[in-house]
Amino acid sequence: MLLLRLAQRALAAPRPRMVNPALLALLRPASKVLAVLVGRGFRKWWQALPKHKKQILIDHLRRNRVRYAVGSGVAATAGVVYYHNHVTVAPYTGRHRFMLLTTDQLFSMAGQLYQMEMEQYAHLMVPEHHPMLERVQRVGNRLLQANNTLPELYTKVWTVSVIDDPTMNCFVLPSGDIVMFTGMMDALENDDQVAAVLAHEMSHAILDHAAEHLNRGYLLDLVVLVPVALIWAVLPSDLLAVASHWLFNLVVKLFLTLPYSRLLETEADYLGLRLAAKACYDVREFSALWGKMDVLEKIMDKNGQGAEVPAWLSTHPTNEDRQRELEGQMAEALDLRTSCKCPPLTPRDPREPIRRLQRGVAQEDPQVTPVAIPLQKPLPPPAARIGTVTAS
Ligand SMILES: [Zn+2]
Image 1 (cartoon, rainbow, N blue to C red):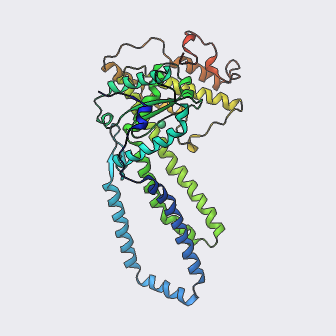
Image 2 (image 1 turned 30 degrees about the vertical axis):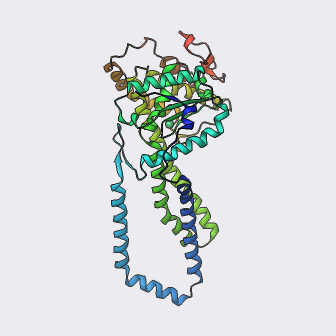
């Protein structure tokens, strides 16, 4: 039987070590520095080369251009074949992805990461039998039990811990260690919304997103070595090379790294919605939760208490995009819930008050916009469900 274990126990649990994460962490920046040094070294060498020697080299390249072209073609083909040999299909979503580092290898890193993360929070961890911890544990166990046909659930030892910190955050490590913050719990109005957050985090672990992210990071680092070396080799001065390198990094981030990160978040929402539907939670609360976050963010933005980050600059889709995406999948999730013979949902749709708030914010309704925390305002019936849930 799958059980969520308390984080305190997990801290003491030994984990296998198969790779040295410190070595991996060092290799990535070291390869970039090497590309810069090689490119810059080539430029300096070329600039210092006498004119007649440059001509000899250019003539040599022209004479052997076919040979060099074939060699480059063979290397590129080998790279493509290598890439395709390491493409796997993500479970449940069918997305193709590059996976070089195995989950087992990552597992040892996850254990160490967890211990490193926990060291800074250890003094803030709520004790066993704390109401919030018990609530997260109860919801987590219900999600696990309802989805116990998924083989990926059995490869992990799931744990939960709650950190007494106002940060609105929750994260999971690939090993299945879920860390929830009291700040996040305060924002969740009911068990259905707790399930929304937990199911999303569990999905990240089930889909091996951390391993995939790391694998793609290594691949990207490898692919950009050539353009980085070229930037430093071809541009005539260090100043130009620094500016172009910065611009190149920005382009990579905006067009490759961030969209990919948002894709993984959307995928975790997709699977999370289905995990919660099978556990008979009110999946409409998923949409309501992100709608609420959207309202809060927009009002804080209008009141100058924070700037809304555009989607293209963010690692996560906007709250509005997440809400819209989940709404698009809602009919399927509700059907899944019905097919699992879940009890009928309450007639009151939790998305309705949120939609009213969103319309109010969009129309700059003076009854809505001036408040900092709109969900604490009395709302049309039933107002009792709108408010902050505490552990008491
Ligand atoms: Zn996420």
